[in-house]
Length: 185
Image (cartoon, rainbow, N blue to C red; front, side):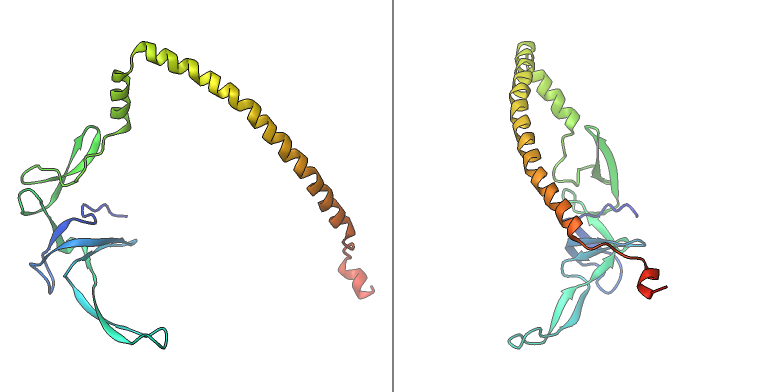
């Protein structure tokens, strides 16, 4: 599968085809084995016939946006407003999309990684607080063990009668015979 720099919600410029020069928002990105296509708002409008499914509905012609190949669109940078090719940069250990002309981030939110969250949390905690949390964890697990044992006992008590019923029904079935005995050979 090919990697694509266009995402749903991006504003793009159609650069070829009957709608070249139009700007629109990406409504959907469709990925196939061989190609990637995008549906752009207001571009590549086609007319489709919609058949009535019930007696109350009316058959009609519906105008909808059809998919365009991703190579026929360019992303528009929200900060500089130019049609660009998307560049990539690593920020806080995360690869993000960047404008190739003004170096502004195209991703609305720069996601903070788990490692960054752990580093911030460890700075906030003191050694005394860490010792208290370690002492609380074994107490919680010890309290949970008796409850788990009770549930196991109940489940085994219920399963025994069910197993007995299954063996009774299996013995009540008539035995199977081979084909040669059915033919009378």
